[in-house]
Length: 253
Image (cartoon, rainbow, N blue to C red; front, side, top):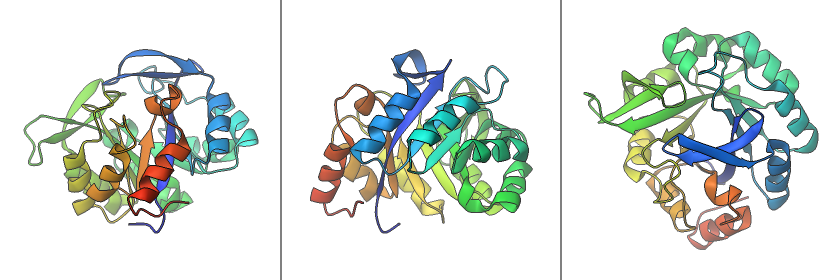
């Protein structure tokens, strides 16, 4: 695990606005992405993650203008995912101000894409985004989905994560669809299983509802904690989360 745990607000973007739902459905407006990113950076966020949740479904590129405007205002690492299909997409995102790029559906369709990106830009730029849910005839009991959680695959989530790391993924963003937006806590079993197979940092995503949820995710094996609803709804601040982590003995920035 890394020396200091990162606290990462996630901005799911659709149509130029931040949206949030439950289990990836019933999305509602949650604000302007640039304004929210600026707010969270001022609160002490360690990174910001932008996920264009409809780019793959709509078969279009991610929103470069939002990335550019955010990078002009926010001076912490920015990860951007959604609709990334080629090394050229990555190059354009990095030129727009992104520091890291998340890849999901396109890598499942063509795993060699991960190696192409890692070889050209370095593994530190490449984040494998995994939208995972329970079910399927897999050894682990967890399957990977694509297209913003709308399509199931027959891929075992742990096996796919292991292969992606071998191909060049430098980080795993593990999002539990079952826990997403429920505020019932992270899927600790999923985090622990990913920790067992991963040789790169694991970011826990999906389910945060209380300050006590964050230390549990770290104890299960996460290197970073990502959340959305609790920040967008002003239920918690970045400082609240970092205080809870520190009180549990976790090193934070």
